[in-house]
Structure formats: structure tokens, C-alpha cells
Image 1 (cartoon, one colour):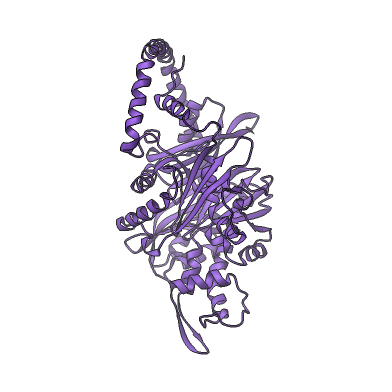
Image 2 (cartoon, rainbow, N blue to C red; image 1 turned 120 degrees about the vertical axis):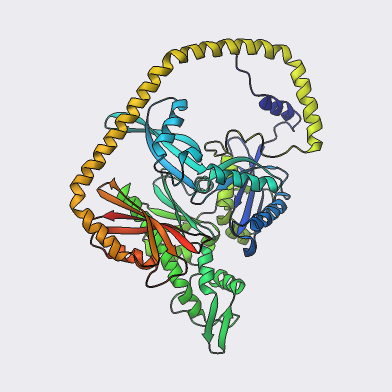
Length: 560
């Protein structure tokens, strides 16, 4: 006999008072650096979900940042947004450098063993310590490796500190976190609501304010994700300054730069005329062009990486979403540069709505709400990074709700007391039997797992030693080359070389002085690596400004 949790019994009992046949609802919350997006969906059996309500709350630039006062201001704005929705439980997206999504192949085993095996398998692939991470997984399918059947597993992980910080933020705003989903997975869940189909290989590019999330999806399953350190704010910042015109110098501040970007979008290099504010349009085009070219280069490198390392077929089309994707002319610019079709994804435009929306509002809000729509559609069904000890303690119960809930619990406990006691004795007897069985199997199992782990470690060490011996003659020249190329403004803190088909991969981590340009700068270092005869390809994987006015960076490169 299986005894359901008391919370589940209570939920079922309270559900009797709902209107018979009332569909379930869920709320998705996407907290960005420039806006808060909320969507409430109504789920109906055998039909597409219905949009009950959606909200986009713009945030002032002043509250953007990790400082305590910024977090307090963000909680206040979030509180105002949540007041527009009756549900306090929300499904939240989490992104950034402390979130990782991986695909791994694992031998066939039970789900209980699978979770621990996956944790050990991905521990070296995470940018944070696995012992301080929240991890969840979903079995995608089966794969064959040298006539051995394995499980294809999608793994999501995030640092516990980042998840707790997100939960605390929602609590301060008066809400309760029901599930936590990595932004790339939530974004794809929202994009897949569209009628554009999911067969073949495509790239989903979500352009946010501070960063761009790139995801490769093959036959409806996420294959690889990457965060690109460039967003729509970079285009706005590029326009800020003083430009010359026929009527003298014209100062462009941040609000005007944002307005020009939204109004004119991607202009041709030969743009003529002036804006309403007297800004020459060729200046707008020339200032935005380097940032657009950088975005195109980063996306192109990501697609090339997937095509070379994982699937020679590559992506056949690109879907755009996010607040930066609605820039006029951007799909055409990227399509021309990438050589594949590029289109905006807008699931909001095909779903039924609780109120009438103007076509202009659908076109502008749809791409921005893709992640929030995905959160509400998934509602923690597959992947949930909410720590197991937190789901039932994320928010206090209001005094008005506590009294009837307490009375209901007391009545249920009194009515079911005798049944629970009998069931407890049966369950306890079965638990004792299982413990005795496990005690006889635990020692051999632990020994077998230890031997398997040791054997795998020895095989990896032997492979690395063999690779090292084969490549030894080039190490001396490579180290001298790195010493020659490293500018004075760049400090290397970590160097690692690992086997990578068809050769070796070089990892560099370090710090660069903030604000440096030209000689001594990080850009010069990357350009020098790309021209080196030792290196086939060098890419700036991540860069992050720290409070000590230095930028931490990570570079990946292939050795010739």
C-alpha cells in the first residue's frame, strides 16, 4: 500500500471546491536585465494552451546590477508585476554563467542510479563545483555505442547559490517559486509552441539586453547551448556620444540612442537623411554596424562549432526571439551573413487569447514572451532545478488561508488516523525487508562501482599520457608562443590542454585590465592567437567584468 503525501491529499480535497471541469493554469516568469515578462496559460486536454494574461514590465536601467539596492528595487518592481496575477506560484527561468545544459550517454541503469552516475559524469564539464550544484535530468532516448545500448540523457545544472538567490528575490516580491528551468530549455519550450515545426536541425537565438543565448535543436531535442557576451544594449551603447551634422554637433544620450535603434533598426551603409532629432542616419548606421558584425560573427562561430564538432549537416535555419530580435531588418541582415533562412518566432500569435490583441502588439510582444510562454507550458514537468528541500517552504502562508487549511488538515488527520496507523505498520515491515536486502548487497555494489570508477580514470589517464607523448615536441614552442603573444594588460591564470577530436583543445583563463584597447588589450590577445601557427581557431567563450575593474575571460582554441 502506497500512502500519498499529506500535501497531495489536501490539494485533492481542496480541488473538490473548484468549478467542475475548470482547466489548470500556470504562470511563467522571465526576469531579464531590462524587463520582467509574465504569462499565464490555461491548459486544456488535447488542445493548445490558452493565454489568459500576459505582462511586460520595463525596468529602469538604474536598477540593473548585482548590488543590494538594485536587488531591492528589482523586488519592488517584481512585486508590482505579480499583483496583476491572481496566482502566487510561478515557474521561473534562470540563466547566466552559473547554469549549464549538457547531453551525455550513460549505460542502461535504474533512475535512482542514473542520477548519481550522471552527476559524476558531468562534474568536469561544469563551470562550478558539482557538490554545490542543483542537478536534474530527462531521458531523451537511446543511443548505440559500439553495439552497446546507452541512455541519451539531457542534464541541467545550476549552482545552489544562484537558485537560492532567485528564490529569495521572488519571495521578497510576494511570490512562490514552483519550478526553476534553465533559460535555453524554457526558450525552446516556448518556441516549440509555434506551428513552424520541429523536424531537422535549427538554431534558436534569443537576443536579450545584456547577452544572447544560442541553442541548437535537432528533431525537437536540445543538443548544445552557449551564451554569447553581446546583447541589444551593446547597440544602444554604441550610439551614445556626440555626432557631427550640418547643424553642428549633436549629443546622443541613452534614451535617444534607444529610440533611434528601435525606430530605424538595421540601416544600410549608404543611409541618407536625418532623424527627427537631426541625427544623420549614416552616423546611426556606421555606429551600429560594428556591433551587428560582432553579433553575426559570434553566431556564425557557434554554428560552425556545431557543424564541425557534432553534425556535419549543421543548422538549416535560424529562429530569432527575445527583446533584441524585434530590431527592424535584423532577420534579413543575419540571413544574408549566415547563408541560411532567419525568421522571428512568435508563438503568441497562434495561441488563443483571453482578450483581443492588436496585430502590432502581437508582433512586438510575441518574440519577447517566448521564454515566459515556455515556462508556463512546461510548468516543471520535465526539468526542475528547484532544490528538493525547498518546494514546500518557498513562501509563508497568509493568515486568511491558514485557518481553513488548518481545520481541513485536522479533519483529514482525524478521519484517516486508523488507516494511516495500519498502513504505516505495513510500510515499515516492507522497509525493514528492503534494508536487510540492501545490507547484503551494499558492500559488493560499492566495490564494483569503485573498481569501475578506477578503471575509467586509468583509461582516461592512459589516453592523456599517450596524447602528451605524441605531442611533446610542440609544447616548448607553444609555451614560448603564448609568452610572446600575451599583452601586458592580460594575466593568464590557468592553462589546460585536453584531447579533442581530431586533435587537442587548449583552454586559457585569466584576467584583463578593464577599459584597455589596442596594445595590451584582450582583443589583441585573441587576434594574436588566431594568427599563430600553433592554433587553428581561437574563440572568446566568456568574459565578465568584476568589481576590481578587471575582466575575467575564458578562451578555447584548437591546436594545429
